[in-house]
Image (cartoon, rainbow, N blue to C red):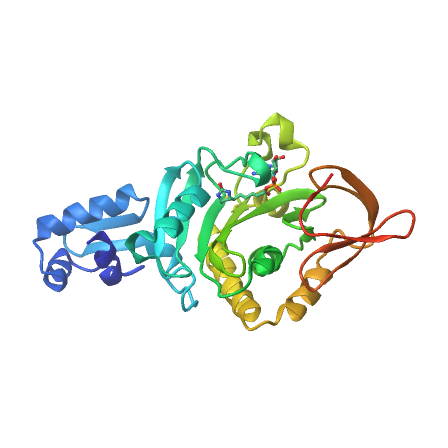
Length: 320
Ligand code: BT5
């Protein structure tokens, strides 16, 4: 109901309680109660005894009605599950994808203001206080499991683009899943999936962007290597706008991926690469390999040229 009232409230213009009551088929007292609910959700609404209610400003909260307002995607974000706090959006997304609870459609997203147990790769922790964008997208791509690294790479391109569109800040991608500004991490991507031998059952793409987080609030152990968009732009960044732009870019690139147009996405990835051409050390689980990052191949794998000239292909790993 509060959402319906928003449809009829006007910015910089009063609408009477009576008109709202009529439009919604409820009493004026019920209208007043819903207005109080909106105020609790940080909508600024002024009221005037004679003129009624006027919407002064909307909150920069990632609530579905705000994220979906003006969102130009066709299916990414069509359904949004919103939490002010939860453990991890990836955990909830996986549960939903796994059990197909509530007939979850492709493009459904889980979004939270804060995570109490945000996850990185390989059991690492992801610090997720209020002020960031923490979201997971549920996908059912009809693609072979070997496409998963490509999903992570295309998500990184979408994130870089969205950040640039909304803030004019240029960022770089460190293979495979880090977005950096001034060599510090501003965004991370966690792609999880369930697959059979040759078919993907579901994919959950988790994305965390440090938006309006003060540097001093990052925990000590990671402070040196982290950065937020607010720090760089020296002002608060509108999270709703950034989340919408990211979802739009994501849908665009995901559609390209489904049309098997990964080479063109890879071209864009390379334009923003922080990795190619550098001498790096990569932790591949059982050992660390050293060499020059010479290419990303058509599967999204890193091609490393070892000191002896041998080329090796790394599908998953962490640059250390
Ligand atoms: C990642 O892992 O970068 C994946 C992060 C994905 C987070 C999103 S938020 C929404 C969704 N729900 C989740 O629970 N997760 C996803 P990895 O490459 O393993 O990097 C993890 C490392 O990044 C940590 O060990 C820290 O060193 C560092 N780190 C932790 N929190 C950070 C933050 N907020 N900003 C930058 N670096 C951080």
